[in-house]
Image (cartoon, rainbow, N blue to C red; front, top):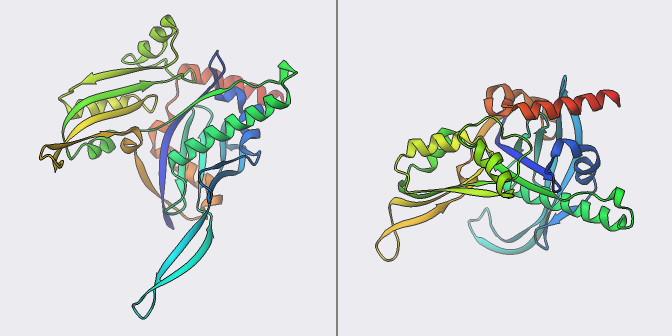
Length: 317
């Protein structure tokens, strides 16, 4: 058994002016893009690329997109500590390819990402690479088919937000004396937001009325940390949360209490899982943890409708 770090997130992808959901574009955009060999050049020595991405029925009527994201890099070793206790200068350049695996559940657009080791791609690396690869694929396709409007592909809005639990939020706030501002950022959704009376109107009705696909809600000086934790947990990864805070004891150079910003990915839950298989072949084993993570099974009425259409289409094919 090996212990691995697992991230849980909501992946929201909508295409074009009508915000067409990800599930409608699995076959003509998502899978072809992830298998195209397009990579994201992070630096001259580091690039990220997807490998072995495919649509897979992981259990009956439960389809996922699964695959590997690889960080292809060169490690510069400029010094070594010898067995004799000496610090020795060196100039070695060692290829390295740490990787992570991912599962995207098409039923509800939840996803997990599991790191193989320290240095493996995290959720931020996945998000940046996914965005760039999808958009590059669409640009390349549209450039080739500029004279054929029927083959032009719509561009996406892509947002990945880690799932927050009450425990992870309270852990993040344990050294905070005051929350000065809480911001919840809204973005175009895959038809998910039809269940929550607190946020539903803000997400759908109001934004449609004023013609805005994005938005944000700002709460100034909330006094209840428990209330903030409950509120962020209730969003279920459908918004990105940020907080401006004042810390308990750390002092700035001026002698005043230190302030800072806590970003969305600093709040998100990271959990440990034990795997018997090599990670790159452990998809079914990873899926086995789904039953222990209720948020991975949370589904809305609109998502059920979209997923049933997806299943019906696959049965015809």
